[in-house]
Image (cartoon, rainbow, N blue to C red; front, side, top):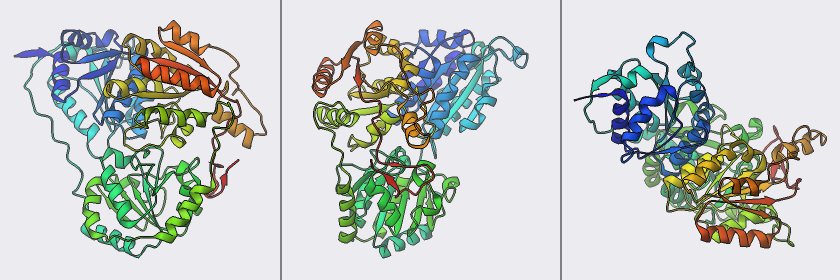
Length: 554
């Protein structure tokens, strides 16, 4: 039986196991939205306040669940409003399929109303993208898009569909989704043996766990390797949760705002084993002084990352989980008591007193959230100081519990992402950590949170400034606070209430304890507007371009 292209789209989404999509309708997507209306019992559509919110929600859904996130927008400005969200997903290797409406084939290239070349625009921020010119190609293209989004190193794929294609009729036949298998064909036994030999002779090994370990599901294998070779483990921002931070071998995050133990560990180790990490500039800083005494082993699914930012002594290309399962039998159990004693000493040297007096500090807020949730919440963030405080002062013990824009650093990411994460994981509590600057950029999604009664608790670290910008202006620009002071509205408590969300103004530790406890018990959306000092700092900090052991501690 023949069905139209819009219905074929629905059938392909169902084939791929999609149960929720995020989007915003418009003229060139009307056939798609008519099909969504007719199939509302099969696919839930979440109407966001803005297309960018839809893209971030799809991203948060994907990061929290490990499934493909799907967002839909119309042509022209609807499609371009997805671009920042697509780029965010691309930088952090998030599986996403973005579906956009396009003007009919007969109008393409004629500067038609709401026409834009979205495939051209997104070419450099997608794993692949398509414009489907004929309805017979629609189902095969969609199936391929989902496969590409998930396979190897995941990422976003865009499918642009002209309106006449969504109206045209075509035969449709169900197909089972193509199985996603770990990339193992590139794993070389000789490479594994070289790595095992380097581990055997190391006296001061260190493991660097990145976001790729979470993507590959290698949580247990990283733990087994660390315990077997008695190696301290540091994570990237994207790798938070890939190794339990309550474990004795954990040193926390590494890099510009990494812990003293992680940064000094990298600087003094003789072997650095990088797992699913891409050596971002925020981690390595001065490459000439990065891990100067270490042989670097790089294990990653993407061969383009090997040696791209740092020289390596050995590498294995392939799925991290599969590689570790092959590597573990090749290494013997060893202990490094002197090395770990040194690591522990560095851990103990930097302690932050966040409980003194009634002062409401961001560190206190994060520790209190950890205590009251038993460390079991999913934390989403915006980008800035609050993002780093959320990374530093909550002990992540499970993967997919810290959700943040790492590579692109997208202010305005978090509220949409919190919606997607909470819808994807309804049994878990999502806490969204925002700065007042970032929250202004996406607070329209309070409308989405309120309408769908998404029980996200939003913590606004309100320091009336663009905090990270001010911190840099203080340290490096002679306190020239150019356009970084936010001495203006809105009143976030009243704003929340205008959307039908419970709001709180909080100035003391006691007020925070009471309000957060109440928000948890209510099980409803809430906004906690927390007033903190304008000159609160993220510490430690490494000045840009300095070696990562040159930490600013106060």
